[in-house]
Length: 379
Image (cartoon, rainbow, N blue to C red; front, side, top):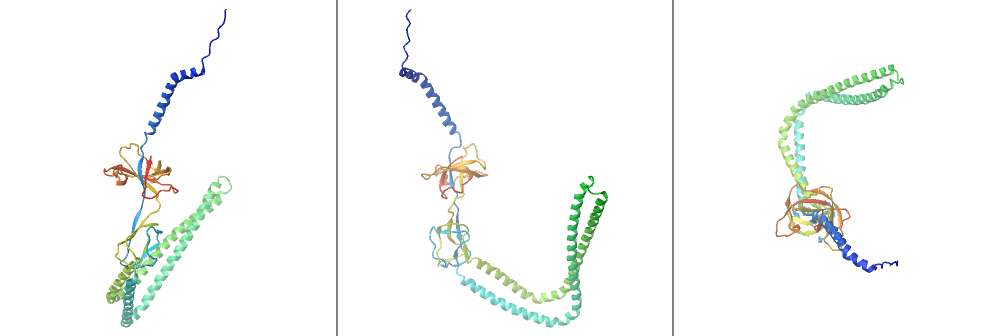
């Protein structure tokens, strides 16, 4: 019986059969997998908008006067550092007030010396009889003060010695059961400790008594001196009032002197110039506006449709809108407590009001972000 061999199927025919049978199914599965993958990526919070934090401070005049040209005219976008003197006010009016105050004080000092001389002449006789009593009371005050200091020193010494004995006693106590220290040695150490504790209490009582004695002696001396002090105060009351006025004038002058130098409150760049050297300014008038040159954070607003709210410590991705910039990894620093009105330049439509929850995002130190620029935020 003759045998017949089966003719093999060509490769191109097999490939065509695979493309018509298995290929469509495989393409369908790959397409569905990609679709589900893209759909899962869109399930996160959609990109939000954020603004690099920008700070602008107005430097105002702290006193009234004429601006002096002490370092040349200001230039727009000049860099200033924190606490740098950026302006001065003409100090000639303040110097004139200072000279007037000095002359008034010199007049009051001469008047005070005259009052003192008259008082000494009139009261010389009365002081002779009270001199001995005053000296005795003064000696008593000094003696009680010295005794109080001595008792304080002794008390502190007793405290230190008691601390040492307490520490030694605590070291010897666990050695008694082992036999390294006899019961007699421990009892002697305990007796010394208790004796020092009793001496410490005595020192405390002595120190309190010395303090009371010092207070009483001081009160007796003050009461005796008040008899003369009351008469002198009545005579010098008008002069005291004039001195108080001069003290107030001096405090006012110190405030004016402190305001002659105007310093930058922060480091940054001069963004606006409001006044120029040579102009007269009043207290509170803006001189220049300083803007920060580097931003430390981004402020973004989450709209109500975002169901998943970030928390402090979450990672986010920031992307500046400038061409050629790459994503910046950052961390959520704070989440605001209340929903607020979104700034106009961060709204999808500037004509429509929007509300959102503010989020502060800390920028890395090496992030090249311009203060005030807008960024896309992906939570």
